[in-house]
Length: 328
Ligand code: BT5
Image (cartoon, rainbow, N blue to C red; front, side, top):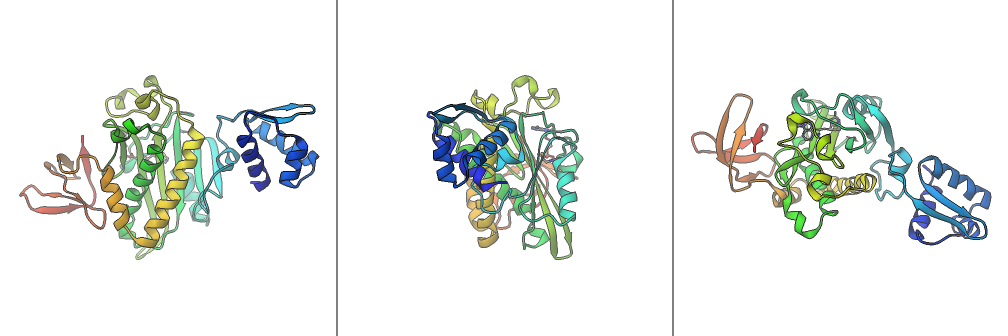
C-alpha cells in the first residue's frame, strides 16, 4: 500500500466540495504532476469516482462501495492491525484461509476478509450465513503471549471492541439497544447482529496463533435474512432503518479491536471485564443455560475475573461456567 496514495485520499476527502489543483497535490505530496495523475488512475480502478477539470484540478465525487485491500487500508488509523490484508470477493471461510496463512507464518495482525463466504461457520460446526456484500466476514490472526486456557477471554475482548465500534455509529437513543450475550454474540434489540468465533492452535502452554472470526450483519434487508434464523437474527440496517457505510465500519472495528487487544495484552482481563459487564445481556436476570449435557434456569450473576459466566448450579450453589449457551 502506498502511503502517498493514503495521503492523497486524505486530501481529497478533506476537500470534498472543491477542486484541488494538480500543482497543489504535487506540492503537498512531493511528487510530480504526472505521478499525481497515475495515482488518480489507480484510485479510479478501485472504484473512486474522481472528476478532473482543466484549470481547476481534481475533485472526488464518490468513494467506492466495494471492498479491496486498498480501500480498507486507505485512511485506516491502526498501528499494526491489518497492515497485511487478504481480501476475496468469494471465499469458503475466512477462518479456513486464515489458518492456512497462520501456519505459513503470517504475522500478527494479518486479516482475511471476504464479500461472501460459501462455507462460513459458527461454533461447533454450525453454519454461518454470509450474504454477499451485506456484512463483515473477517478473520484476524493473533499471536498473543497468554496461556491457552485464557484464550476464551479473547472472545469477550472482541465483543467489547465490536460493541464500541457499533456504538460510535448509533444515535444516543439507540445505544441502550446494544448488548453482548455471553459468550460470543452481539445483539441489537434482542436479536443477533454479530457472532465471534475464536479458534486456537496451541502446544501445551504455548499458543502458536489464534484466529478471531467476526461475522456481522450490516446492510441486510429483511428478505436477506435466511428464513430459519429470522426470529433471532437482524442487521444493523434493519435495526436502525439506515444503510451503514461498511468500509468505515470495518475500519472502526479494526481501530477498536487494536485498542482493546493492546489493553488486554498489557493490563490483563480486569478492565475488559468491567466494560464487558456494562454491555452484558441479562446480567442480574434469570437465564436459561444449556451445556453439552444439561439445561436449567438460574440467575446470571456477571462474569468472573477470568471471563467465566457466574451463575448457580441446579442445587443453587454458585458456579462458574466456561462453555455453554444462554437461550434467549
Ligand atoms: C457464531 O457461532 O456466532 C460465530 C460466527 C462467526 C462467523 C465468522 S464470519 C468470519 C469467520 N469465518 C467463518 O467461517 N466464521 C467466522 P454460533 O454462536 O455457533 O452461532 C451460530 C448460529 O447463529 C447458527 O446456528 C444460526 O442459528 C445463527 N446464525 C447463522 N448465521 C447467522 C447470521 N448471519 N446472523 C445471525 N445469526 C446467524
